[in-house]
Length: 386
Image (cartoon, rainbow, N blue to C red; front, side, top):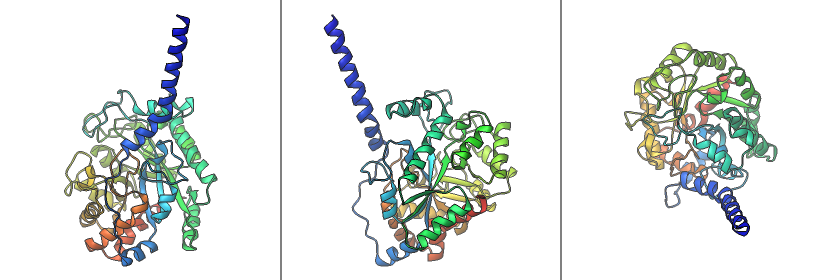
C-alpha cells in the first residue's frame, strides 16, 4: 500500500510538472495563431515609405504569456526582435487580469469562473497574483520593466519627455521601441480609487474601463444589458482626465461611451476595434459613436483580426482602415492590432510593412498613411502625457 501511495504521488507530481512546463506554451501557440500565408511581397516603394514611418500600435497582450520578449519567439504575434524587423516605434502593452470562462461577444457574467487565475497558476506567476487582480496588473508591469532594464531596444514611456527621447533616438537611427503600459479593463482597481495611483506609479498610462464583463465602473459591450457608468466609474474617468492619463473605451458599452464623451474634454481612444458599417458584428459599436469619438479628437484603433475587419489579410485590414477614414477622417484612425490577445491574425509584428503596401494599394496618400500608422497616436500621446 505504501509503495502504491508513493508511486501515485510520483505520477501526480510528474503530471503537475508536465502541466506547468508544457500547458501554458501549448495554450499560447493555440490561442495566438497566425493565418498561414506565403511571405508578403513588399515593393521597393512601399518599403522605402515604411522605413520613414513612426509606426505605433495601441494594443498588444504579450505580457500575459510566459515568453521572453527580448528574443524572437515562434509562438504568438509580437516580441522586441519582430517589432524591430517591422519598424515599430511605439507599442501599448496591455495587462489582461480577468477573463470569464466561456468568454463571448454577446453576454458574460462577472461571476463566471476566471480563466486568468488558472493561467497565472500554470505559468507560475507569484502567488500574490492568484487572488488579486491588482497584483496581476502590477506583476505584468514588473515584467515589462525587467525587459526594459535588460535591453537597449526597449524604453517605457511615462511622460512626454520619454516620448521625445524615443523619437529622437529613432531619428538618429537607433532601434529603440517605446513601450506604454495599459490595463484592459479597470477592474484591477478593485473598487479603490487609491489603486489608480499605485498603477500609475507602476508605469501605467492607458486606462481602459471595461473588458468582457460589467465591472465596478460600469457596463461592458459584452455584459448584461447596456449599462452606463457607476459613480465609481465617473470618479475614475475624472481622475484619468485630471492626471494626464489616456482613456480607452474599447469593450465599453455604448451607454458608457456616450456618458464618457459627455463628461470629458480630452481625446479618448478606442484601442482595438472595427467599423460596424464595414464589418457588422457584436464586437463593433455603432458608427455614430465612432463619429462622436472622432469629433472630440479621439482615435479609432483598427484591429487585425477578422471579427472586427471581416478579413484579416493586410488588404482586409487596409479596407477597414479606409472605411474608418471615410467615416471620420485620416486624423482619427490608428492601429490596434490586438496581437497576442487570443485572436488569429495574418500579420505578426515583423510583417507590418505589408499593411503599408496595402494602404498604398487602397489609394491613401503618404501623408495619410503616416497619420494612421503612428502619427495620430503620437498626437494623442503628446496631448495627454505630462
